[in-house]
Image 1 (cartoon, rainbow, N blue to C red):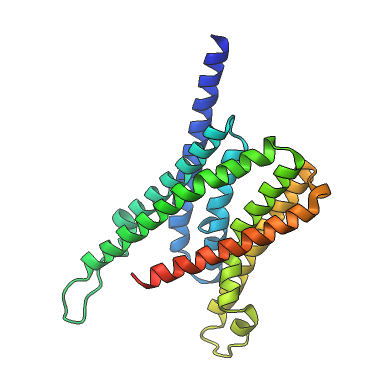
Image 2 (tube, rainbow, N blue to C red; image 1 turned 30 degrees about the vertical axis):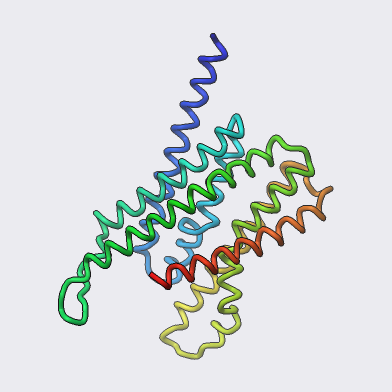
Length: 246
């Protein structure tokens, strides 16, 4: 009976923490949209990127008591954060409203349609990525060294894929070579934010390797990181194509 009660309290604490993380993610992502300049671009990379949201799902799974709880809690964090973010966009910032079509009629319906489609796409992404990242986090903590190394490497690749995709589409040296003074600050922000998306997952990997003593499995780490990054970059390419077709 005591074990059942303790398990119930543990689940309650986990749910409260997960809810708090989700609310914080949604709020910070919404606030980042309103910050301009280089600071705003870097803030988006820190709190409204695949790295930020993926890390939240991964760490939620890492501290879960079971694989099922890891998958469910990580998914719940991403779903709740996504819903909160888009609800804030619809009812607070209302950036979908106020535009007009060429014939002078309101474009509000088209704006709402775009918001609805993007919400659906990101919710699908949350349902797919949530269980995956949650279970990877759980494996890093409870798996053997080999499995933990593979999980850590794959996670690092997934979290850095957005940055690698952006760098592949437009290399930093091309952006920095632009001589237009009106675009210099914006392009500098793009370069910095893309580097943040690549470097910070590697910092997380270094932390995991040190914490879980995974350096002995460096070949598995390397292969998993590169493979995960390539797959993630491909998925971001497909997502960009889907967004451009809307």
